[in-house]
Image (cartoon, rainbow, N blue to C red; front, side, top):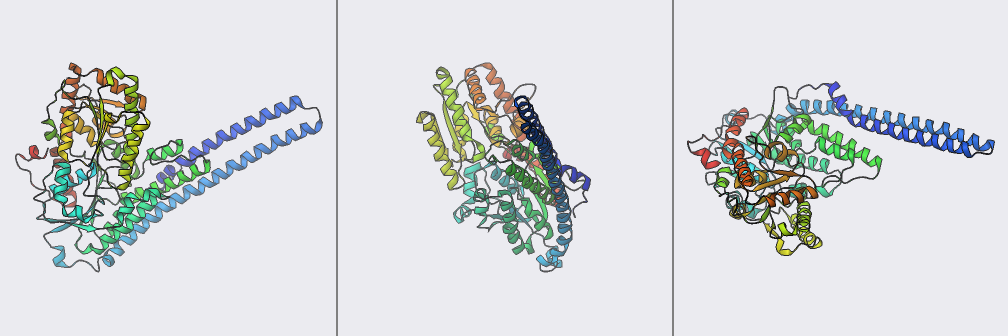
Length: 566
């Protein structure tokens, strides 16, 4: 049952947008008053008739009246807006609290029988639309599933992957991540076909956040209802929080592993500042900006309510922890747990450092998604080549990643076109698409610099892989890489950070100049040692403790298991 929330706290949080816009309206009033005084003085100095002076005095009276009217309108508008937010919080809390217990027996077609409640094998529903894919989120998913004993639990994945992928899922996961899943048996897929459009197409529609959230609740909720007789636990590894109340109404426990919050305070700040980004198109109209702020604020409150229905909340980084802790209405006594994603540290540590023998390759690893900002990598690399021809002449940029769908493939084509626009020689840039794990290991053993450019990357598995494999890391100076990974360890640096095109080009030059020097070997060794905290064995140990909260006992650890998983 959801806890009671302080209406005073909600009212103060909901008035943040009102305070900001109220202050901006005061600034606008001040400018108008200043202009009116200036125009009045100018008219007085040049006036020759009484009629001119009278019109000026009339204008100076009308402007304050209009300003006062606008100010009162803004205040009234945001008063009703904040009241609406507070009311919506209370309404949905009461709705979910009251309807949940009522819907439970109805959706279950009656309470479970005694034999059903005493069954030995429980069923875990897994919510992950693109489960058979080559991304960091999928790697975390399969590490979790590998730890669940399938003799005690049935695993059913709600996804939209093709039938071909489902038939080859074990081989694909081994190719993608080097993970053998021969012991995972009681695993099946529930096809939620149209969720492919939900995940990949809804971004082109207006009100994307609401559309995706409502459709996820309807689509996945319907699938849960159809199979509710055998469901015990819902494991969500994608962040579709609006499904949680449905699962709780069906009597399931909810375990959430959050990679990236659907909405964050950073997103709200970008809208206020009118900062362009892949998920924020700048509006030139003040009213459109105000409307978007209202929309985001409303959605953030609803997102916080539904997130509070999770029994166990795990996040992948300190940055995500801060946002989820602030956004979600987590029940009293609960805790948001930081559980860093597992990285194949032991496998990558076996790669020789070869400080002075690595090739002049700048390696970028990541799915070809818009937020990864591969265009920034190309522009920075072009500047590096242009500004430092003597040092950069021997360097090559390799972009290695997977494509989820046709849009990602089109993005690769657009990046190839950008190479030509920037006048970069074709042999200086290489695209490696949907490569197996062995190909990735090969490049990690050859490359000298590991490149990462996503702003507000929640964690950054590829950054840890760079460090473990012995590359010199150059990551974006924000979120996960800055807070958790590229930090000092044993009083020594573990990599480099940058934000802009110019900064990236400069850091590339500085790292290139250090090639073969003793300082590089010190950074390599220190960075590699720091990655042990992100090993798969550390992940498994923490995961086991958290899963016990919802009654899931993971596989017992063997004496050599930590080495085999790491």
